[in-house]
Image 1 (cartoon, one colour):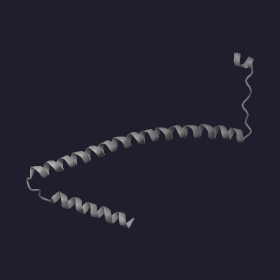
Image 2 (cartoon, helix red, strand yellow):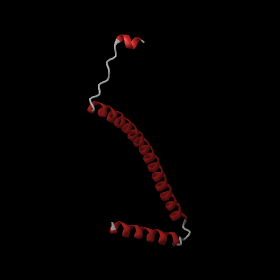
Image 3 (cartoon, helix red, strand yellow):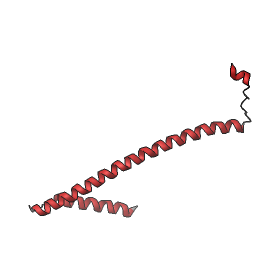
Image 4 (cartoon, one colour):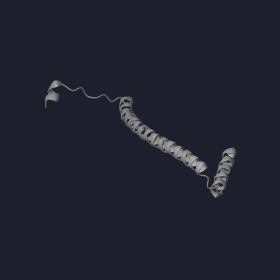
Length: 95
């Protein structure tokens, strides 16, 4: 955990240092940097959308699983208590 905090502090220190750097006006370097940044941002945004979709799918799977568990736990309790569903006769079903 200590290593992780140290790395996070190092990363923030590097980000601060990079943010305060002055860049000479070299169009080639600036264009190249802009392209790299655009590419990284596009990839990150794509990953974000994919992850959000996966999370939504997983949440729905979890919801459905919870419904099944609740339904079957109720049935299991009735069976454990010796509850048998009364048989439906044809005359009762016709009413």
